[in-house]
Image 1 (cartoon, rainbow, N blue to C red):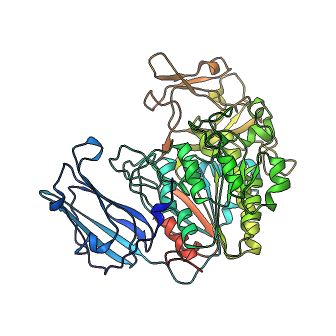
Image 2: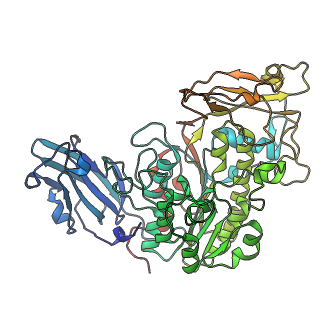
Image 3: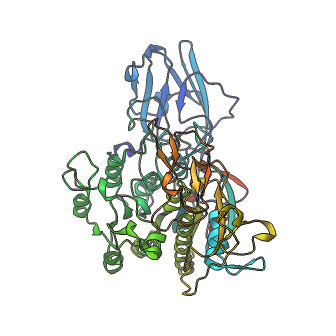
Length: 584
């Protein structure tokens, strides 16, 4: 995608008091949108039917939109053959903070929305911002990580996670414009744009456009930083780099599956550090393993643009920190769980045996980005918490949570010598997961259900960390945590860690419905659990619970109480004093 829509078009308006609103047409940005002064967006009005352009009236605080924005608008008489008209004006902004009322009419169609435009402080609080996303991170993941990593004795934790001591905390609401239950696309998009969006959408409002790349855009934080500052931007994930969370830093699409297009958006904006999986979308279709449908070779294009390419942990360790621009691609798809890579050493990692830990990627990203005296924004995602939680594989999810926490510890160490660094740790959404006690193999009998201990019969698990690496030495101890998900397809509960590979709870039958995977049926003590999700669901789903955010450093005091997820964007832009035009 070309970045031409970032060409500045600015207009100053006088704020007014906003009365109650009414709706009859769709207007984007939507009602109650909050926007940064100078932040770019596409403005769109959708009428329910074909209208006469001569009858169209669009006023912003009483002024014609043509007076507000001098840029030419597009009137679409019959949008996508839907017998309905639209008005679109791209790449606009509002320069003066305050409340705004947008009134639209055409014949008998009319609508009104209100916007709130804010200005950031002139004095920059933070030089650097590091945002950690634990995809799907829930309270139970953290509790289990603390118990398994640090231990617990007589009711008190034997140690604390790095996350535990971040100074400020808040709850965050995660719902999208179209659903109370969100996905990683719209939740991360809210963090990265300050605007709400819909499920599966990145950096756009969900309009009626049929082309997934033609929905009204919201400028992302990565774009804003690159457009207005000399700061560096880094994106690190153990998922595919085109996956929703890393993609949200820079991309715009109604369809998060537009992964080939997302790679082109990365190339257009050129973040200084890109580390993760997903090389299949960087390679031309003629290369074995490619998932592109064209001959674009983005690895070569990034290299020609000055990026150092590394493809395994050894190269990252030896060469990564020396780079000024770094592209690290360590897997064609999502990277593998740390439990498989470092502890079980099973067949899962045969294809890519030398993948770096998230900790190593975090440290290298900091080494490269911190060379910039103007500061940096770094997003680090521990994506595999979510990837393991969907198939109800809580042990892998918790080991990945420990990996996230150790990455946070690296950032905290960096902040000791760079106190002008704001560290934020949160998730994008939660999973319905809870710890209820323990499972004790030494209890008599073969009925695994009777080995579940609750209340005073739970006692404590017997994980050990003799080598002090922060991970339990064995996951398959005789007395382990009892962790269950509250939503699931039909599956066999086996009460044990899955040592060969991730759990596959359900498989599809001839009717297209998901049924319990029979490969687990004959494991001693396995119990059939009838699902509580629709039969088209193959895994567990996200929960709507509030997300916890914690932070330390300049600007962290803004996190308290309950916040909407769009407010995280505002905390960051306030801390970096963005929205004042090009910084020198």
